[in-house]
Structure formats: structure tokens, C-alpha cells
Amino acid sequence: MTASRTDQPVRLTALADPAPGSGRRLVWLASAPDGSPLGTASLRLFDKEGQRHLAEAEVAVHPAERRRGVGSLLLDSAVDAARGDGRRSVVAQADGDSPGAAFLAARGFGVALTLVHARLPLAGADLPALTALVDAAPAGYGLTSWEGTVPDELAESYVASRPAMDDMPMGAVDHGTVVWDLDRVRAAAAAVAARGDLLHTVAAVDLSDGSLAGFTELVVPGGGEGDAQHYGTGVLPRHRGHGLGAWMKAASVLHARERHPRLAGLLTDTADTNAHMRGINDRLGYRPTHTAYEYQLTL
Image (cartoon, rainbow, N blue to C red; front, side, top):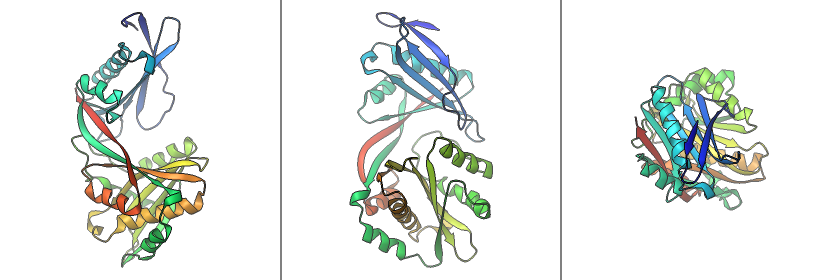
């Protein structure tokens, strides 16, 4: 496909998905007549039950090529592909006050969710306070943890705990319903391992019956250096009000500090309307770094 830029033609080439994972991904490369790359776009087409209406776009253009039509050509290709695949929503993310935010807004995408990103520098973590929090176990609960895929003996209970995140604030984003089963749980862990990273999960156990009451996930870079990234944290509704979220997350921080001494920090992002989780992060020493927006276009 060839289209025009303000001063020279741009060729769009469809590429093979460089990173297969959950759902299908379509990828495009924009290049100049001499073959030099100008930018890329990718479109993730979710294929799990409950999310087949949704696509996620990402566009990246070399700074020298911005405001010359390259990004618009790439985004148009992604949106057209989503529409042609029968999707009803396309989402994309951009940092606040960034060129990407202005670009998406100008092309009809509206802000559907505001995310507050925060970081805990491990060198400055209050280890005595975190240890005291973990040691003060809520009555009737215990902790368990694992690396990689959930152990077989906990698999059924862990799958049953995954809906703990179903009611977390998600703004106006049309995310649909994420349906978790054992295959999906194992596939998610396998995807982290395939890229060379380590998934560590801490879970709260209801001691009355041995079932899992909640969980928190942390993904550590394969080399054990740089910053690790928190994934999901959730507590089942019937177990809320006992401080399990802060308890599990504090345990995760201490484990990361001990198991990976070269880690620099831990990253997390939380909806600005999720006052409870933001309060937990503040209590544990996380400090906001920047704000990002999830944009959405209804097709």
C-alpha cells in the first residue's frame, strides 16, 4: 500500500507478528521511498470470550517524521482493520501531555480511563515497616506464593480467585468481560516466561477451608535488574475489609527485595478513581511518576 505524505510518498507494509501472544496482532511498517523506516503500528485483536469486540492499537513514529501524516496513515490502517474484523472499540494509551495524547484526541479518540503510574525505589523502601505489616497477619488468613505457573494443587482455587479484579474501576473503557480458566492462567504465565521474565505471585489463603482469598502478581525482568512491574492485585469481595491487599503487596515487595537484590524499583499503575489501591500504594511507599490516559474510539 502506498500513500502520500506532505513531501514524498510513504509505503505501508504489513508485517508478520513479531511477538505472538494473547490474541492476533497485525503490524505495519511505514517507510520512505529509500526504504528507511518512518514508523510502525500494531493492532491487537483480542480473541478470548468476552473481549472479541475489542482491539488495541499502538502507533510509533520517529520524532523527525511527526506532524507530516505518517502517524495518521498508520492509525487509519489499524482502525480500518479493526472495523473490517467486526470490532466495535479500539483502545490506545498515551502519557499525559505527550504528542501521542494530542494525536489520539485529534483523531476522535476520547479519554476513557486515567492511570496514575507510581514507583517504589527499593533502596529507599521502609523495610521495618513492611516487615511489621507482613508479620501482623489478618486473623484467619495465611500467605502462600509461587514463581511461574500456579502449582497444580492451587490451580482450581487460583482460577476461582481471578474474578477478584472484575469490579475494579476501569472508567468508560469497553473492556468487556475477561473470562479466566486454567488454560488462560497457564498461557499468561507461559507468555511471561517466553520473553525471559519471571512471574511471582503472592496469595492470601482462607485458613478455614484452604481457598485463595486474593492474589498479587509481580513480573521481574529476566536479569533481575532494573524495575519490576506489578500486574494484577485483587481480593474477592467476601474477604475485603481485612487489609489483605496491603498485606499481600507488602509481602511481594519484601520477596522481591530479598530474591532479587539488584532490582532498582517496582512499578505499578492504578486508575485514578481507585482510591483504595492508590491508598495501599501510598502506604507502602510508592510515589507517583506520571499520568497516562487510555483512549477509546467507538467504531
